[in-house]
Length: 157
Image 1 (cartoon, rainbow, N blue to C red):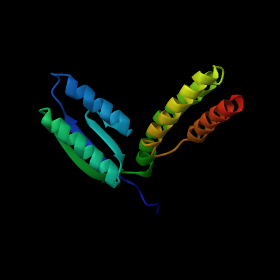
Image 2 (image 1 turned 90 degrees about the vertical axis):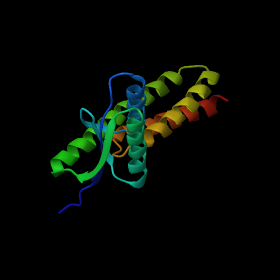
Image 3 (image 1 turned 60 degrees about the horizontal axis):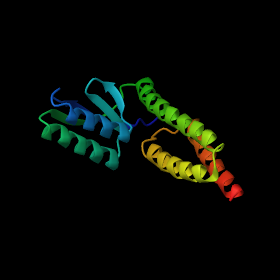
């Protein structure tokens, strides 16, 4: 029998007004790469970092007048676990495709523009990889596209 992942779930409810805490929480959760399980329920694969990040998010919810709790659990079936992982991988795959498109567009620009694009795309790759728990094939493709942009920049210098 395959070992199943443990997940950390954040279950939360925030007041609608003011909207600023809701927006700040949504942005934080997006940066973390959570999968939305249901309204007010998000999940990440369990490790010390993800648990701590969701603990901080829960504290922010409570400070904003809401309710929050963390749960550690396993998916009820391998199919449910696969579904969560595939949803997470699908989101980051789209981000990697956007990186590849930007690298292709930057390759057609001036050397100075390519240099700026290369720096920006490397930063974006680092940010995405921080929330890429189940790397899709697009991850390697995006890295190659950015590295190729770096090679094109060096060749034109």
